[in-house]
Image (tube, rainbow, N blue to C red; front, side):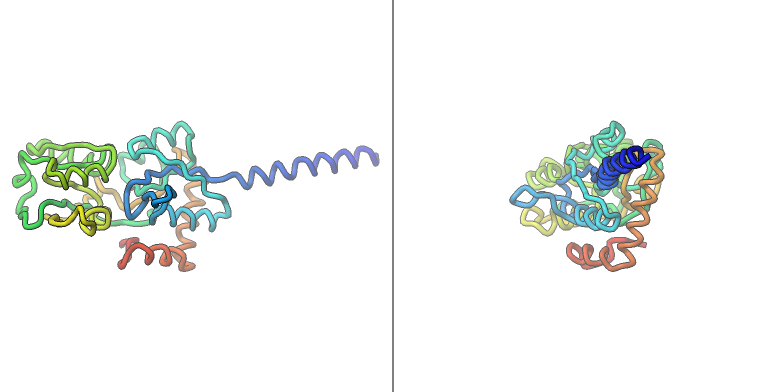
Length: 259
């Protein structure tokens, strides 16, 4: 009996570290690190930005380690589906179309879309005034979907890119007339930089929930309600304990969370 008890204790001692190791398994997060100020690379090659810092705060709240995996934006959902990572935290808006293939946490920020063009350009009716002009959008983004459904049928040429940074380069070189993107990304990633001198926001805010959703959320595989709920609870927790505001104030002078 003593031998059996000793063997049982030994088995438990061997299993316990395995259980602890499983509990300590990192949360693998997909991100596109080319979308300032939400995600970008520092000169030493490290990922930084609002999305990254929010992710770190959420992992700390959930008591897990973040493992960041870079991926171009249009490949994030396919990579999530094949389990390359467990979640996507990359300024991905919660839309009806995306909810067909993935689930989301609660939103963690919400900002409108805008058009940017040469300063002084007047747009009374974008669908009329942009006819025949080239508008750059990031491929597979909500801006791509809106431009494809609304701009293209009006005779506006939609040009798709892998990253928003490539669009800004072509705006500067004169190969594009406009870009439709997140207003904060345009402002911080382009208009406030030397490359964006001579450009400005034009036209209305774009907020149609059919295309632009109800804010950016963290995507998980379809049916992974447990993880989505855990992340949502962590978002509410960092909103309540002040950590969210601490991260927000590092990048923005306004409430990026939205209504």
